[in-house]
Image (cartoon, rainbow, N blue to C red; front, side, top):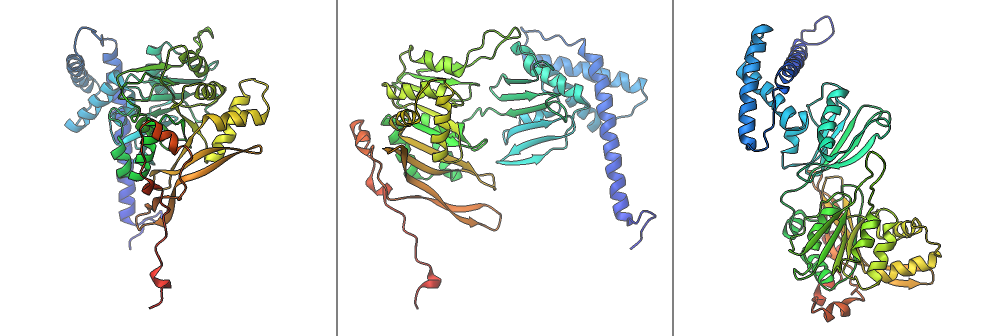
Length: 458
């Protein structure tokens, strides 16, 4: 093997040289694209009366003319593929959100994470992966942030370095900039699904099985109060979307969210969204304000996207005062943790209630906790469906109706296992019958492990 003076063989040296040339070419294209952008940006006038396709055609013609003019002046000779990259770069800056625009249009990408100008990650099929795209510098990221929040009348600066926003398509955006973000301006975009998952999709993905689906459908139609619990990115909102589809179409539903993500298919749905304070620090409307207001709007069902704070008290009171059949989500790792978090949130409401009184209210309000988790292979599964039974002394009692029993991993690293019934029949089964929901008793039959052939006698 031939080694050069740096101890590398010729093949490695050639590969390094190719990577260096590729990086150099990429930088040249970015720098030239910036020149083209600066040349055309002042001439870009969005005509509200013309169609987007017409506007894009006009801008592309301007970009093409600028590429030719600047190439002549700077003595650049671009390949057709290079000109296409330059055109895309400028179009993304004008009509999109810079380097991440293509990922926002990619249906397989569910999350886009900009960790400063040089590190952009995406989530695809439940797994996080790095990308090759970069921003020029911090100012380039800040420019993209301005494009996101300016139409909303919002601002972000040193005095207000964090902001939550929403793209026109409904995607949820969180922004945090220096001095709080040490490595540069940060953007996290949770993409909005234009084609929401159905129950059949979740069964195909292995999130739940058919027996659990039948039970959850009956529980929602039978006006049980259900809370979906799980960690960040575990699929809580997706699951809430699916089970809310079980609500009958002749009921009046009011949804309350920080950022409207739920996509209910029923006709009679009112969507309420909280609002942060304006630049003067006024006009803030919290989730709690909206939950209280829903009680004056004659709801049949209240669906809260997520309870995080004092609104938990108002939600529980609504569940306990005739608004049964309500649904919500919460950040928690287990059903027991869900109860503890709810208790803490109620205390945040400022009411001087003893712990036992709070627990009694929780036990009386809730019927089901559906625990969902994201596994190492990126899959999301319901790991427990637990009934809130009642109080025993000072403790809320739970019993698992269905659980996910993990059985290891296959050769590709995919989680193996099955959803099984525990054999326990929920106590509210009679309540479901009063609403005409007859759940087959067979779905609660306890799963018996098959005998291990290696342990059987021959």
